Image (cartoon, rainbow, N blue to C red; front, side, top):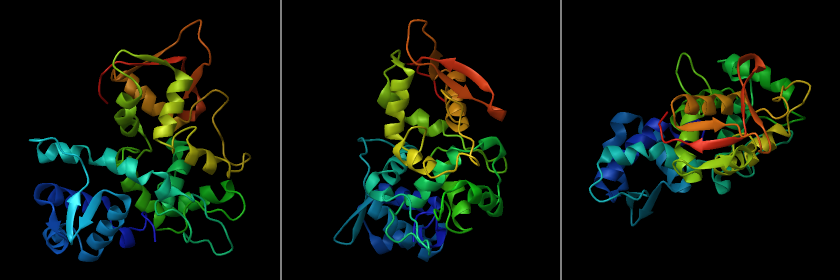
Length: 298
């Protein structure tokens, strides 16, 4: 089973509870940890969540004791540790050893042989490549959209349990916003990586910035997971962005970050490649050649 199957791998609420208790009392006996967290969900899901995130590296176990594998500055409050948890979990779950092989094909498609987080990376890559403003909100609607798009016997979502599992994980890890008004919007994921790419006041060519960003978040435009998924989509049924344009999902993230002052999207007349943002109904929002770090916050 894989991460989007909530019965076998738990949910992000269980991971948060486990991390909070382990951060406060760890190293802590595994049984004590599970018992302390049992009010947050059934024991089966808690065990599954702990097992999976031990595998991902969020926790370590030694002599039956569990420790949260996050560096904590001396005196840092528990809230500060938990604030970093979505970013750390996102980086862990998207590592190659957890996501590859990404695509699984065959007459009886299963996740056997695929990465433990392959379903998340594959499903998220597909969703972020879509018209995010008109994406169905039901598993049946997604199945009807996905089916004509994919080549051969490839499956993005293997069954109707995976789509409901993707939405809360995408929101928690910074790739979506809202509940009833749910939208695949990776603003928070992008924002959390800005300081690893640019210093405050530093400007970088847009194409270089996007390459760096896709290396850090490979489900975004140009990322290795995203490219693999897009290579398996039929061009006659999946509408890719126009030449030189970014997807709607990355476009809204960069636009939001520009509007709140985190970054500036600049156009320099003597520069190279121009990049354009794609808005609702595939209209062009704006174009830019450079990205400058301003220092605001989404």
